[in-house]
Image (cartoon, rainbow, N blue to C red):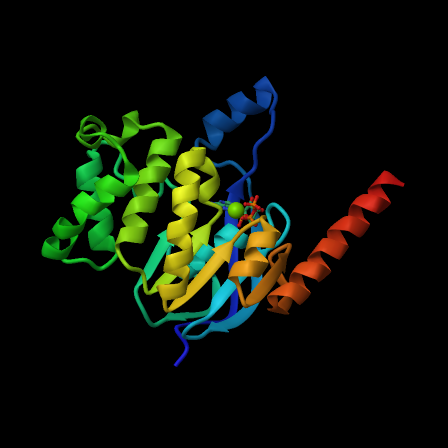
Length: 254
Ligand SMILES: Nc1ncnc2c1ncn2[C@@H]1O[C@H](COP(=O)(O)OP(=O)(O)OP(=O)(O)O)[C@@H](O)[C@H]1O
Ligand SMILES: [Mg+2]
């Protein structure tokens, strides 16, 4: 059985239009149309069909704004698809947008509990993992007792990474998360990623680091303006993408 299935999935965001308006317009609008700003639709994903099977290590590449992070959030269930169908059979652990899912007013310890529950842990099983999570993060007791909103970005990355990787994931979703920690943590995190990737039932990895991606993944999916441009063996897709990017910048330079 497939762990994840997407069937002709599309996702549309409705975005408010920003821009300057004149004082007259502002006053008239403010008066007659109190809260309406015009909106437009962004088709972030369109017609995506794929299945992810047991043991699969899937990479996702593409230009900025191609829809990679949106695809991961859709897989994680953060966004429901606007069209099509999503089916997931397994426990998902995600490592992306570090602030997502953290409770800013709660301490590091309490956030470990919340995230643990979200990832399917029981109160007992997560309590057993809190000490190892704290140790891997190398955050001091003082910080762990403090509300998360006092943390630096790197500290949040340390905590998010330590939680997500101490709780053994079944399906692991990773979005460019390692670059924010400091060098010492990055090295440690890479080691742990490697062992997680080999033990998880399935992994989906979004990265602009094409060399690591080809090493870690069997298949790669190339997204281009929300559409699936190519999907196949990692080396082939990475080569095609690199060629397209190189040609594009050559044309721009000429
Ligand atoms: N919450 C949101 N509301 C409205 N539009 C969004 C939202 N999230 C993403 N988008 C839009 O969806 C498109 C895809 O964005 P996404 O973040 O998935 O790109 P990406 O491939 O991850 O890019 P990057 O390489 O820069 O991380 C973009 O046009 C973006 O502006
Ligand atoms: Mg992204």
